[in-house]
Figure 1 (cartoon, rainbow, N blue to C red):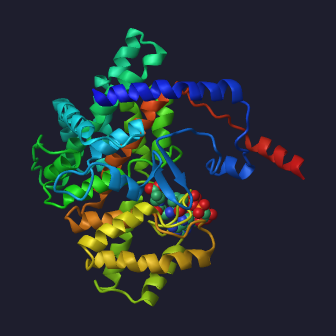
Figure 2 (cartoon, protein in one colour):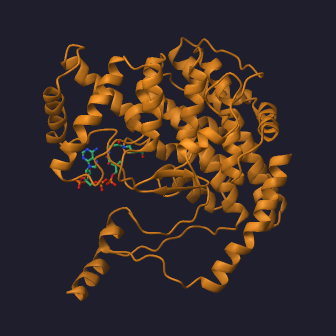
Figure 3 (cartoon, rainbow, N blue to C red):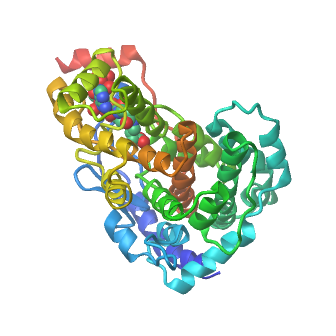
Length: 434
Ligand code: CMX
């Protein structure tokens, strides 16, 4: 496989850089930790390494050095579509190179070969109560497949540490290839009266997902855009970090991806896109379905804040400007659904919320994040069950987390084990600082 050989060459080229840093410069200090950071979720402490993506607070995410507009422009496009192949993005995340058409098509074929979801996974999904949250179903499906792990098998057989990345890479492709079918199956079973649409193996990752969801064009492009935008956001966010942490114990990719989905399911992380739509629709009901005036919208936002809730879709732990993932989805809305009522609400929120959050003075970033915009597009194309939105995020995020774990194994990153202190110790540090 071209991708695997390209990856092998990249890994061999990269390893001496990591080895040299540890051996010769291991004691060089890059970050300090304050009491605030120690209690406050390790914000801003530089203590993770990833080359898959980098998040600049002002510029937003770069995938392997490419901004979102550059990524979307440079990756080979699916014929007849405005959006690139998701498979090409997987290639980019893994290797750092924009693939040629031939390289993408090879991966498209590879995914097709690996895409068959085992029957026992379907059986497990079917025995779960239908009101189970779709994220619980999704995570369970991945975990159930752990018996398929090539890494777990090879590890038992006694593989060399230098070769860990190869079976990890196999697990990566095996899992990614099955995600569209698992996601769409959960959707159709749970929300479309169990009318399952079989895959069409002539289609790419995004196209096949849209087909199995039963939604016409341009939902295929919506899916491609969505999966690419959500793929990676450095490695400190909850989902990516959870995946990395689990894999650091040499738990295989199935354990890691199931766990990363569980982290994504939290309302402060991936579930926020669901919260955004629920919140907007609450406002719409109160307004009797009409567009509120700016004054009315401001008063809804203040009511939310005064009741002690956050305004969903705004703020970010790292970003300090409008999320470029928000902007890209906004561009899509401006092109395809400019007059949609919910989009108009979202646009008004873009105007109204940041000054209010600034006035309130708590949120470090008053600007919208990716989740403020994504539910609107799904709703417009008929995916109105918002509990499902985080599954879409999960399919996308898996692209980045799997790439990270392949490289974790390739570069021999050790088991993660930060050190804890007690509150009394912090109080001692505090006393000494006076
Ligand atoms: N509305 C109201 N208050 C907010 C806020 C918002 N959108 N964003 C931050 N704040 C508040 C925080 O709750 C915190 O308040 P306390 O001091 O009372 O605890 C204060 O401002 C400082 O928070 P921060 O340092 O700016 O933000 P964090 O790094 O702690 O949290 C995030 C980041 C995203 C969890 C937070 O901005 C938030 O809750 N936003 C709304 C939920 C959301 O949209 N999440 C999706 C994020 C994207 C993703 O990961 O998928």
